[in-house]
Amino acid sequence: MSLLENIRVTQAFLESKGIEKPEFGLILGSGLGELAEEIDNAIVIDYADIPNWGQSTVVGHAGKLVFGDLAGRKVLALQGRFHFYEGNPLETVTFPVRVMKALGCEGVIVTNAAGGIGFGPGTLMAITDHINMTGQNPLIGENLEEFGPRFPDMSNAYTPAYRETAHAVAQKLGIKLDNGVYIGVTGPTYETPAEIRAFKTLGADAVGMSTVPEVIVAAHSGLKVLGISAITNFAAGFQSELNHAEVVAVTEQIKEDFKGLVKAILAEL
Ligand code: HPA
Image 1 (cartoon, protein in one colour):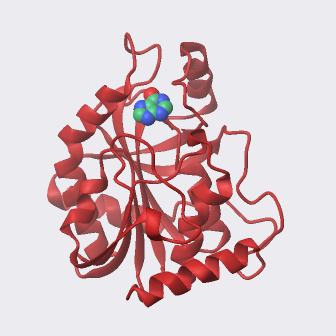
Image 2: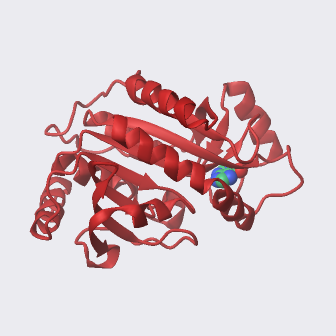
């Protein structure tokens, strides 16, 4: 079956489960999936039960889709995303974003854990723009004309109005929210110190192994995007060593601020 047919099958399956007219998609990164537990009137579906859906294999990613009410909005949340480094084709990595669009979402909030290039652990960063350092692009192949153009404009992939709302809300809540550029790599290795020095020169403020493919597919179809990075560590060369346990532990510390912020933003979008 074609990608478009697969999208329609999955859309019909989710609609048959009562998932109708979500307003916003939420993609919850490493350790940030707990937010989905606050969704009221929830319809919860295991990834394993959804046709054409990938499987989540990373510690800190639950592998459930949760639909319902959060902060007065209808949201479709992904507790755990698919990464290229898990061996997933980018079509699988970005498939949920296609389905969010097909179901009628207006926008997506894409979150991740990232290494700080300048920013330190515990920082919340609104993504202003990205640098695609993966050497891949999820739109390679036949273009889905129903979704968007062959050559999509990426000038405002991260919707400025959403970011302005995020900052206004953060200020009201007394939560510090920085702005920065996210550089996306494939992983699964963390970067070398030389790579991080290079990325700094290129203008990156945070580095991570997700988000870029999903945001490219979102931008292609005109979905509005708010990207938020939770900085969990100094990137390589700025601290003695890196490990996933630290990423999970720091996310644990900032998740209350993160959850409060995202909920308050949703109410205002
Ligand atoms: N590099 C890449 N991805 C990450 C990092 C990092 O330092 N921290 C959390 N995700």
